[in-house]
Length: 94
Image (cartoon, rainbow, N blue to C red; front, side, top):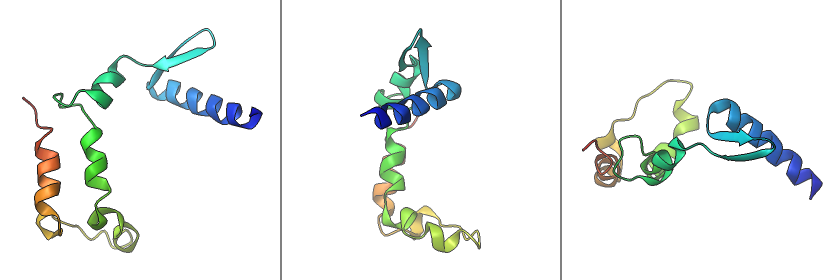
């Protein structure tokens, strides 16, 4: 259990430095703006939709192959273009 605490402490210090969490004495908690980023589907700052996009085979599976060449991929080149575009568009600014 001690080893897990070390890893957790390192993550918390990194998250604090990145502004992801706040610290009071020896206790960490998510920073207030993280609720918007992680939970507010209506906010243009919401990042939840990016996970659906990034886990698509076209994005994840070809990354290593095209990285050296810098080859680009357009959304309409994907097998799931409608899904990808829908996931992006459902998080548009309102």
